[in-house]
Image (cartoon, rainbow, N blue to C red):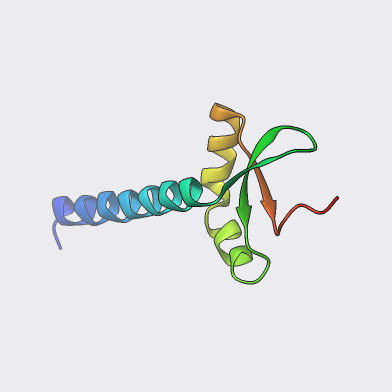
Length: 76
């Protein structure tokens, strides 16, 4: 396997990771009325796995955009 092939695979995997995260983020944004902050909501059932898979992306996203993250719906 050549070096260019390996780099190509890494680029594709990173593009799928980031693209998947961005699609999920856009589909699961919620503004919590209590604090008027925007959150990406990960479902309690299946979202926990995605929460940990995308944890590195959420750290970067939170630092750059101020986005917050939550597992499960907010409860008052």
